[in-house]
Length: 294
Image 1 (cartoon, helix red, strand yellow):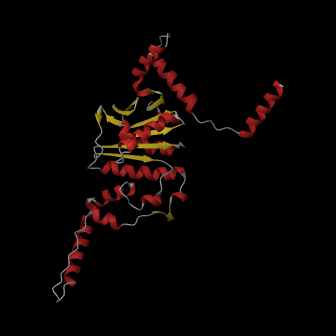
Image 2 (cartoon, helix red, strand yellow; image 1 turned 90 degrees about the vertical axis):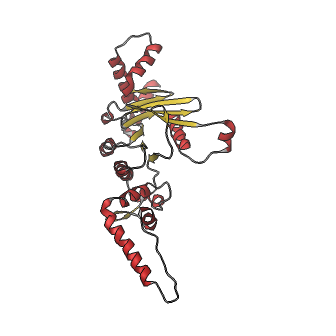
Image 3 (cartoon, one colour; image 1 turned 180 degrees about the horizontal axis):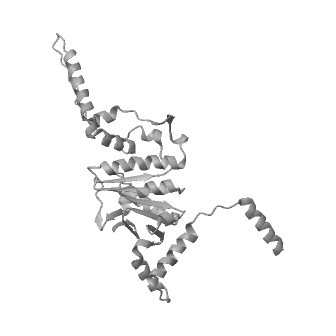
């Protein structure tokens, strides 16, 4: 089991993780964790942070994460296919395409392109003594020539996809990157699960060679014991010994450790399980109750 530590001023969060962790938290704690990561991996340093000495730390197993050797990605419904297809430096699609182009199956095709450029250079020679050369094509050069777009029978963008389809598209890109990565020491992925589906859970749990933290307000049984509550303190089902020690300090009741685990799991189920409500039915019930109280 690994540990990711996030330090934000006086706040500190220790999250134990094997591959996937489902986090249920207050909006404030979730915001602090995300902002700490964004700040840690950002090149921008504001005057305010410099003047006040404000800094965020992100550690993996108590060692500072190397920003250059760590890929941090956020997957959410705000993802814009249109913007990401512009292939800027933070583009997920760009990272995916660069890895695809490094695959040996494209070696002969890229080599053929270079031979054609050499042939064209020869043809451009003239009697005036002007010769030409083309830069050799590699994955970096080729990626700059690509104009990608999302296609599923017809060209689509983020406005044509459902919430699930948009997240699955990003997850598939990350899956390929994590399986073919030969540079990054760590790949850390944040996923906003505003909506939970069986397909999304299945695809998230199948991610390999990366560490995934899913933020959700809706617990489902498939999340099993890979869950943690962050409400000022971190209560992690996979680190129940620490939870039990905290419970023992606060409570006069002495309970078996497994019973504490069950209580904690039930708390997650009660507080963070989405319950679909029939609004009209609820209004009718409220009207009946109000009449009885008058």
